[in-house]
Image 1: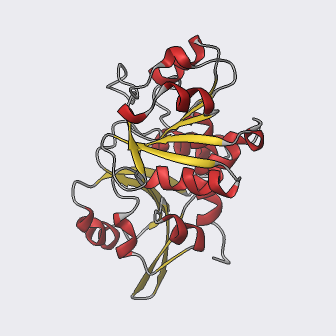
Image 2: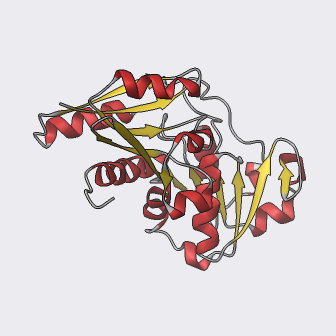
Length: 250
């Protein structure tokens, strides 16, 4: 049996186990199963891999997408540029175990934005500065957008929510939430912006997928904005993970 799984902490919000379990069932893949491995301490990763000899692939979620890199033998060029990994391919040869890191968020972000006219936008606001944020910024900058990062406190190259004035919000077509705000069970939270300034020229993209329509997206939709759920990205990056795990050339 081949085993795959998800590491992060906590994992109560994750749909990955459900997604892959249904995939294995629907596609009649009988020699695989997927498990959640909540790790309160990332340093327990080595013990996990040693204790699960059938484990051949992992997804990585909050808060370890960047911290995980120091445990890996090699990472892809995209993951290196972004500074975040969310897919691990585990190669076992005799007594030797190698961990290879990749970033499938890039594929998920591209696929989520593909149906929309993102190439006609010029500016983007990205809420959050973690591993998912770095993947979003990587994709958007490759598409030629001017990206402004937003966090709770302003630092070099990053503005705070209180720095977002009407002129900036009105002139920015794409707004992306990469924070956990609005994620189950805290579904009554959302990024602190003036949603009244949004209109049908705006596109709101939330990487949160549980719930599918967050308060952030709902407030945007009420103003006529186009909204993109994180569920689309989840499906795309999950399929990319499966492709990576089963590619013998990697």
